[in-house]
Amino acid sequence: MAAPKGATLALAVLLAATVVAPPAAVRAAMSCSTVYSTLMPCLPFVQMGGAMPPQPCCGGIRSLLAQANNTPDRRTICGCLKNVANGANGSDTYINRAAALPSKCGVSLPYKISTNVNCNTIN
Image 1 (tube, rainbow, N blue to C red):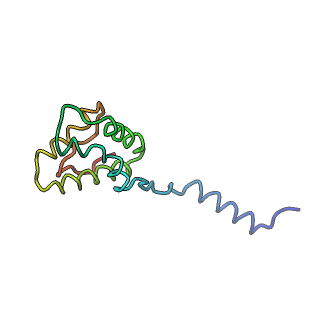
Image 2: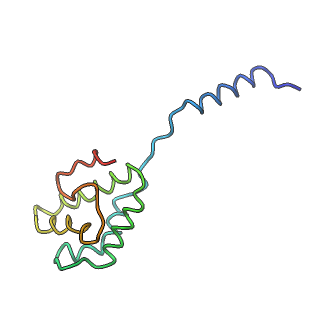
């Protein structure tokens, strides 16, 4: 028995809609609380300095970069780091130490950790 014409038409419309519909927007899975807790081992280095940050700090940076596999996550991480920099109460020493973390850990960020980075330009 053949399907009713209305059902066939509805199925055809549904299939056409799934083909031409744009994909759902990618949303950030990352949160600032995740960023902060992952980077907590970096705090002693930012506060007191030293030759090298502790290994758990560098591991945290690498972990965040590995998890940031889409633009919203990368922008979220950038915004969280910018918030921390803004909360440093103008202490250039802390901001400079934080900005040095990626290179000291042997990783590269597509932006500089600072108070004036435009996170909306991160892709």
